[in-house]
Image (cartoon, rainbow, N blue to C red; front, side, top):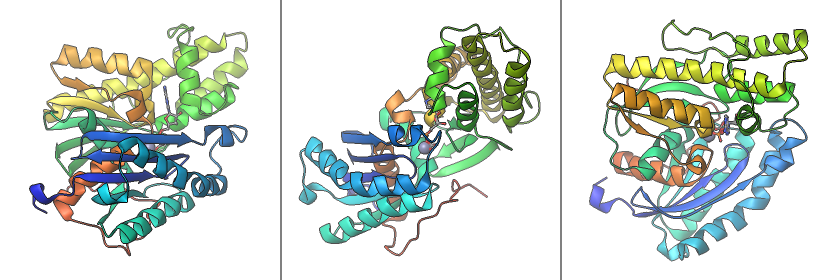
Length: 339
Ligand code: KG4
Ligand code: ZN
């Protein structure tokens, strides 16, 4: 599609997991509105996301959330040029709610529909806030379900350098927090508690630190459990801080080494774990030391939101045009990679 004819104002919808979100973004970077309704309280008592509850909550919340996004943007259907929704990866029932609503809305308003890859949307959260990022760019994508080192050579051109061989970083935060009795979601709870703890109190293992670009976090989780059982007197804040230090150490060491070896010009973070205070600080320091252009998306842009969906949709529309309305949801969708 010709850039000048790319639809300007895109309504984005995100329902892949436990956030019901809608946003209007103009030209891929100008956020006119962004509304996120979190279901955290609904799932907290179960210690994690319950898929069926998430789908039902999306059904209830989506219409008011979209309405609020339109009001905030000062627009009605007339002012929207395309409707986009996350088609995967994510929970199948949850995805179906957002995708069905987006397709129906696009049909009614007679505008294009764009199916968006959730992982690509996380990459675009950075471009949304800093359109001048220089390529090639190393992206450390760390969420509840993914831990990936991606080299973004250009828009839509990605190379996967490394990923987790077991638990995702966010999953490790959530599981350790649950074991420590810190509730759900675990990442923000550990982040807060770690500020009062000593990160050097316990030296937890740094799995695969010098071994390629892949990650492994399940051994670390087991080490935390074993330590706490053997040393129940260790203050929980020290355990949290030491665990976080081990995760951050591995993430930053590998991302840094990868950036150097592939000649990246900058490094950005994406995904919910990118909201972590210690990770943000360490990435910033590393980039300054290594002469890389750093970019840390705002915390609201790190966790799931629909502005990043609308932004990625704008770039996808430019590259591929509208998505056919018979595209299915794709719970196991991966990032589209170069061969
Ligand atoms: O990207 P996201 O909102 O949803 C997925 O696509 O997975 O990421 C959610 C994950 C959860 O595992 C949550 O515990 C983690 O991000 N998270 C954090 C922080 N905020 C959210 N992890 C560490 N520190 C944080 N401050
Ligand atoms: Zn996400």
